[in-house]
Image (cartoon, rainbow, N blue to C red):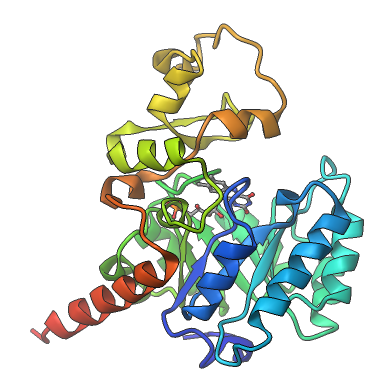
Length: 312
Ligand SMILES: Cc1cc2nc3c(=O)[nH]c(=O)nc-3n(C[C@H](O)[C@H](O)[C@H](O)COP(=O)(O)O)c2cc1C
């Protein structure tokens, strides 16, 4: 186990509710934290840096009277295409956000800035090479975005990925991809992770900002209804097949590198608004509970699974 000291005793379930573009907002974050799970959101879910700061104030105010709440976090896209990075990082440091999740780039200066006030940096990785770069930047943990994850999923099987990472690095391991139940949280921990990272499961909660139609489509979908394609966002990502079809995208064209999609894809933000992402975990999601009910269910499932296990 290498859980950073800032998180020890602060999570009543070893889970981070993952940041999701256009899905995670202050209500989801605060309910997660109050229910013992670290809640997070992408800074870009607010249109401006000032709006981002307002959300942080809202979250801090809601958690002020909750001394036992889990820490919250935010996500920064560390890439030249994100014009807000510098301003959002400045606000992050001024507001002393406890957990910063970085995607795309692992930059030592950013990590130092977050460490200056005692914050943690966890970095998304899909390959060993990304992991090496992130460790060189001195991050506090690696988020292994494995096959079947919602959003920009990797291609590696989690069993193999976790083991390889643990053999090479001594760091906090956060497992991402298709984890929807308490038994699966325990499976990630048993496989060697310190924390499980759940996105898709939290899309279908009462407090998520996803439209009702999106939640319904996700609940109807099985794992086979998830399409992995680079053609929507330029980087391979998982999408609901029904959503692709609803947007006039041919499913064969979406997965066949030799076939053109036949339509010009608009800018990425617009694409994610209408073409809905979800991971293979959708096959295990059949309802849209409150975050409180979901967290309590995950804990019950985790404990029931743990107590059903017997030594050989
Ligand atoms: C709709 C959606 C939006 C996402 N947006 C982001 C994002 O803005 N930043 C990010 O780092 N990850 C994003 N992700 C990835 C999640 O943070 C997380 O890695 C993933 O959802 C975990 O896999 P799971 O969905 O199978 O639980 C997104 C995922 C989904 C489903």
